[in-house]
Length: 435
Image (tube, rainbow, N blue to C red):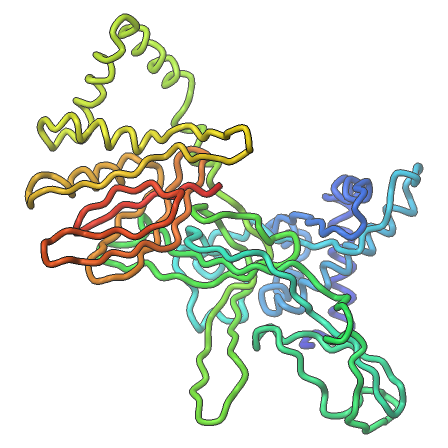
């Protein structure tokens, strides 16, 4: 602990007064919830908090890993105070799992990043913007264990070490203040019984947004660790802003084996930015233009379709059949469900095969250009490619696609279901719907 007792008390008192002034209604709403074991966030605006007390901002920027638990403890004290002062307490119940989620950092290069943090940023609380390119299933994580000294029967808690992939390490001697030097302990919540201190855990990988990079730059990626209520809060393909602490971790040491360090971001709050892309393009004017267009071609809808196809990929002349196929893939379909409840995807696949110079790449580049978010990736020389695509509020997710080059210059495609893609020998733009 790098903060002394006076500093801890100051941070707790200032944060309590801030929460009572700005988030009292949020606390009362949480106390009305019926799930006493759930995890509840309280979203705190960093600028407003720092304006309340600049000293708190200095402590937070210097020691984020120590200050965030103080915030959580202060929230529990505020919840207890609000429960005692409430006039009607029969609808309220105390919640132990309250988390302060920090957002709205000042926009400056020291705190807000569009590029992946580096080693010099370890230990700092940053805001990082990127696109989710991979997610894993939510897992159960045991984050602490109770041990008892065999000599003095002192019970103490050992927390999992985040920097070593949540491994547990027993102390060399008993931590009893009375001076017991025993080194033999019994685990009270080990593998022989059901763990009692567990939380939701998930890892995702984010990548720098291509449109924000300079020409010729390769987007980098990093792992983001999500815990408690943050788990499963975003999906592959989402544009997100992650607020968290940059940390490093490594696997246990082994003799004559090189130790590899990994830079990860331990998230405190996630803001999904997908909604900002929608609602801007579809306004009343666009809606009226759409309705007027089809009212004009009400008697001959195929003529309206042909007019749309004529404007699709204008750099390629003709090839209306190919343009129709590309337009159908981009528009997508409607998911169906049979009587047994089996869902059938509505997206189709498209494979473009042709001689060099026939415009295959032009169709792919145009498809990537007109979609709100997409990735154009090369298939030659690689066994797997990851991409993500978003259309409106429908999220698409890609995991792996395998390309095998044959002597006859024919690309063999191996993929799973629920894939919608546009592919040819050299390049592919792959779209996958996440159910």
